[in-house]
Image (tube, rainbow, N blue to C red; front, side, top):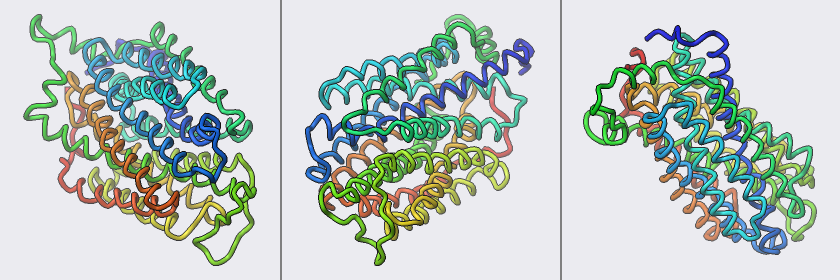
Length: 439
């Protein structure tokens, strides 16, 4: 379909806003990875090392609040994007995640913070399907692998941005609430999107040509044949990297924070139990932020390449090798290294690179599974429903923290096997490599 309805300026504004919407969603996602441990040490009145398993529980619960909130938001705002328009649904999603994150500033206990986190993440889940659908529909002449890479990289730019901010201003048990005010700032982008960003021409055309009384029922359509099989496959494919990030890679950050506390002598224990030699020990409370910067920096490059790799070697083969590389890297980090090891920064970067290449692959592949009339709903459901499975996995990882006595390395070694499942699931996925987007 032609997009002559949009000028060059309008296309640029659309792409920039969609990119920024998912970038700031990435900032929101990463905020609690950085602040959860310091916040709970503050709210619980606990000293580092006294109750690491309990702090690990709260870290897992905050991850679950994000995952379940984003899953619900993907369904709700994805459906809204097919019924009311991509731009409107995206703008409301941005306002949801930013304003509710700002309200979290006043929370005085972990449970209030947890509820507000869940509600804010409805907007995080809602942004992805609408931003991706809007970008690929409004700019169909742009290379789809390039577009997928840009959208996949956007969230990781947000991760790196917040990592640098938190490196400049350390997040400690005495000072962590300010991060929530940073998370409230994108509300201005939501207002701008609502007022100034044009709607998808494809969506407008589909809405205008639908006969009265024959409006699409996108949620019902993707949950019945012939699209049901694609929906289920998409959910599984979206779940693998989300579980990998939440139940495996994200543990690098609190693990680094604990190692820095131990190096400062907070509990008098040695952190280095997995290597024979003891390298120079980092005592800097900003080290967790640097770990996030490194991992997310690698993720930017990986996600940019995800769509290109999928186009070069095929959708299914690309996913298989991404899973294989992620499993190998995760296993080496958690089984061989620790945050005080000189190799740790490089492999944190590498895990970000290979483990987030998925997120350059998904924006290319998932929209190809569905026609325009249900694309936002289908993309939102397939990507975000995997978060429900991921939430169960994160709770399982939290249980492993108790079982393994707060040993992050053993937890990470165990959860890394999720990538092996990815190598199996992709064998059952349809190959969409040769086809254009379906109207």
